[in-house]
Image (cartoon, rainbow, N blue to C red; front, side, top):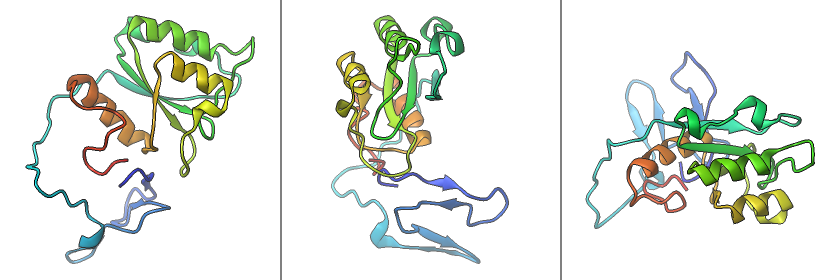
Length: 176
């Protein structure tokens, strides 16, 4: 959806998905009425589906007061290879002496955990460099970039871990 968050708004009706900042790609009824001008149009490239993924990816929302050492311990040691970390606003996270996100991330990154920094916000641009904690995260190799929905970021990270030619910050299907 070109980087905009798509949210499931109903469990039982056809109009189950909504994007607050992008028009509908299609309308379901008796048939499907597409908005062709909004669909991703890639010319000159043959579509090559990717079926290889690394499912060892999770999504974590930063919660104020949560100590990741207690809540998540050693994710890499438990087989997790990537996380989508949902930070505050433009990419901030707690960074006090009693909040251990940066040391925990540093330890997990040293072990090889791939981290994609996202936001808990639906709209906007990520700028983690505006905050000390976000800057530390970027310096240690946490990747952040154009906003993707958390679900999209998880799937893209699964693809990137299994297919080294896929970069998290380069669009492959209009997701950024």
